[in-house]
Image (cartoon, rainbow, N blue to C red):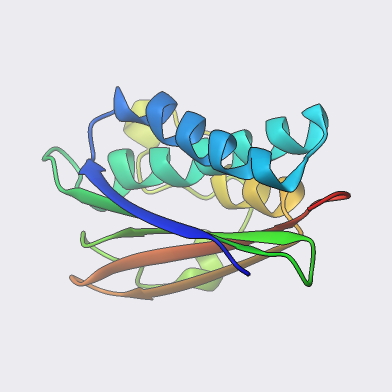
Length: 142
């Protein structure tokens, strides 16, 4: 049987640590290695930070996080959704070092980091409607 959860939280930077901790705790049922937990936490941190910094610019909106384990695939899928400004050019946004906030000295490596620490990553986005980043992490012992 697959297990799942969904939560909503404000796009406030102080919630980034909470979000990654909740996702990491949920993954424990899959018996991940410490390295796998750290990879997952890093990927979730990047996705949530993107919502805080880019999706709502200088306002606070909603971030939805959903997770589902898949025992048959020994994997967990995490989706992080915002209802902010959206991404007009996903291909451009996926390029290393691209950022919409150079004024804040952002590295532009968020999506690259997520791809590095997960097994699959998909982005869907609509201008002025929001973005969903879906990532899949395969564990050795789920």
